[in-house]
Length: 420
Image (cartoon, rainbow, N blue to C red; front, side, top):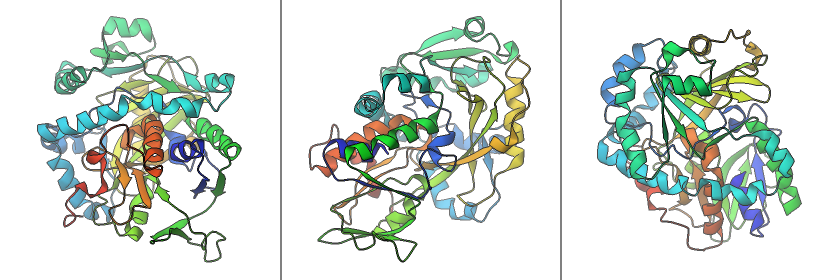
């Protein structure tokens, strides 16, 4: 969406192809996220201590990491090996520096897009309270010290909070689950992530763009004279249209399309499955997005109730939702709040797919196979945060202009093709 809007604002005749019948609905990835605009999130999930923590993480009933039993786990072995390789401190520092360059421009990247919306409509969707991160023990707090050091080095603003100070901000937190906290100035949340996507989609036609909803693109076919898109339906009206350029920004499904271009050997993309649950009758419980670092999830106030979102489950795109994982999220949510929550509405349970590269960096740049194909995917936990700046960079590539900064760290062929 951000890529399409930025290109349209620059005068391109844009066609947006979307598999879902409508944009911003529950089968779209951005519908179910926690809503936090995480401009502080410059450090990747990778860390030097993570490989030795994996056994305990996989055995803990409240772990932020789990496995969904499936054959896909065997296919993930190269990805996992590369992920562990990128857990060394030099690799984490390099990833952090590259993410910091993107996140520094995250808010500026959205300004021309959000200006397309009426101010009152935007304000109804935005929660201006800053994001709070909470650690429940001295051990977990000290274990995250190196990430705080990296944030300091890159100028991330943060305010240290004691347990009492956190309770002053959020009195319905459970006191015995609070050790230390960080408040991140300049961050905020969304009350309706899917609604924002839908509102931005409504702006596209006003810029002369065409939306092809329900279009299942199966192949991207570049040539010297242009690019064709082949849809799974053999009678698709656009199959014979020759586009000047194509942007592949399909999240966790991007690897399949990169393969049709000839870049599958380099596209080291896989998915982190993430869940959310909803308590629609829980209002005025917390005032801001709150990340519980020990368990890897957010509690966020939404327009339609309280949402708990997050955790990481490995298992690919096709394994069914894990009801035990959803129940665990509910159980832990109740344990970190002193408020007596109403029942969760199980029909709102949701599973989404974060597109993740093993080094924690997205892919932004041209295909090595064709200058006419531009990639923009792999933004893992911060896709909504980085959408605006990614769209701006992509539009600069489409116009053959110098990009705001060097995109070498984000190239698709940065991985060993023999491994993938």
